[in-house]
Image (tube, rainbow, N blue to C red; front, side, top):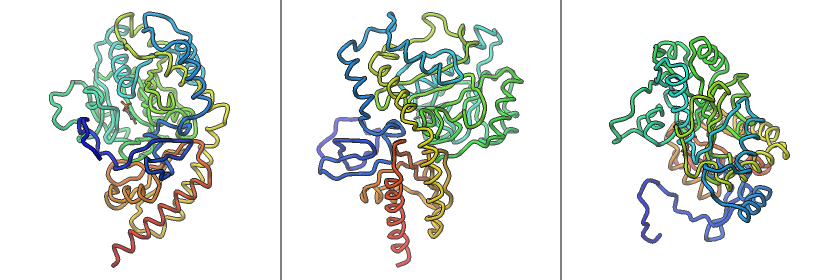
Length: 394
Ligand SMILES: *Cc1c(COP(=O)(O)O)cnc(C)c1O
């Protein structure tokens, strides 16, 4: 590789990708890969999905950017669609997951401070959570590694234990404005929230007048077998945050909120130059329509269940595997040891997977992934595991 002029914020794999189609990627030497990373759960419709591409091309001919000082049809249409498919009533558009969570935090504080006038500002989040890299969202994140060297951090964030309602109760004070969580903690290794915990949390929020914010940045847009993960739990969050899969790869973020939050923001109280610009709006609407038209929820549910079954069965013989868990096509395979070297081996064998925490491999293929592709991926995984086992014995 020649000299790079980028800040060294990423540990890049020694591969240059030049092309993608559906669940396959090509590198600059013509080698193909089975892509079970989907660009970090972004390409839920696979690479370069035809219907989305056509809608982006149409928009490209019409209008690129005018700012939020004007109405655009693309933005109004997409907001209407998001309200139609969710329990929310209002949408704020931005450009990334962290920005969507920032908007949620700001909205929760403004609601309590300007609408209810009770001065509340504290946000309870969870250990092992991940909410982004801006100063507020890395403070919300329940992991030390993202905070190192960034002091001082903003005030008003408290962490509770995931799946432990008593721990949440203990952290509620007169100042608690909102509780924010991922229903499946993706980045830290695919940890699922227990249904009884989520129901108790939702009840607790109603009882205490606390807003419930669900971070669906990774779990949303069909990833778990429903449009949103909250649907699995039978709850209705006050705020939902989205990004990653929302526009099939164009930068986008969105905060969705209930009607009662309408007056939390007034004109000028929050804004984004690029948020809601026509290209990602067109891509987003086409993404949602394609998901529904092509029945991708059902498909993700089925392929996900099939994969969990096969993985649990086929990985029994490998003592290094500690657990297999998942929801839809967000699957985690937990190892007894750090997985980083193992992931390199998988990449060399043509299977691209993502790390979760230090000990978990994440399978997050496109929602179009076929049974054959799933079989192939599991075959590669078992093959590399066998080599690994052999190397440790001798
Ligand atoms: C990726 C992610 C974020 C941050 O999104 P960015 O677009 O990288 O800012 C926040 N929350 C969750 C759950 C995520 O998976």
